[in-house]
Length: 261
Image 1 (cartoon, helix red, strand yellow):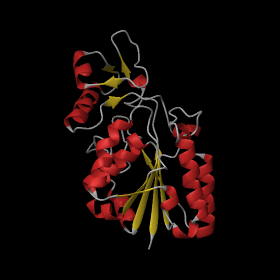
Image 2 (tube, rainbow, N blue to C red; image 1 turned 120 degrees about the vertical axis):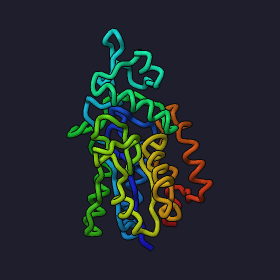
Image 3 (cartoon, one colour; image 1 turned 90 degrees about the horizontal axis):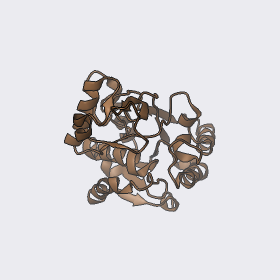
Image 4 (spheres, rainbow, N blue to C red; image 1 turned 60 degrees about the vertical axis):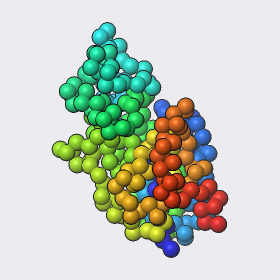
């Protein structure tokens, strides 16, 4: 039996109380993930970590938008198609594409567009893996003589990229926004794929949704580690339908103490 870990966005900005977009509970999640890696290195054959990575002038950051008075939206502001059509929020860059993007999210039934605090800025400490997880990964590499794989997402500034496998609205001219079939094929080599990381409500849930939609062959291999992920405060309900669909399709759910017991 070959096992892979898929660890979503276990980065400082999400997982440390001083991070720009701290997810309450994430520190404990990281401890549990690290403990699994340190305790069972010989039973973990492959580890993929994902790295949310942005620029300041990202469509989901305050500087990208302004109102008629030149004020930027506060973090956690929602911007709807009605808002952009009415001119309540005006994109400062690539205006036509930005307006179309907000409408496309709604047409596709995806999450409403949110503005987040600037987070996981490329090259910043906030974009780095949490130290506790990094130490566990380095130890695993030394014991197994294998490197973990790190996959960036979110660098294209005109779309959110919650799920690791595809941007929320792919741009046909931007390869990194398209479905990452190479990553799907890489994971498909393993008998069991354990999904964990941050945040449950957003990047974990959307990664799961993309597997449900685009990689049905992986579904029988997938196990969600429920106590190794936490929600953005007050937004867990957004992902409830995704996890309900996973249960309906017989995806396995387990707590960390049952992963290898």
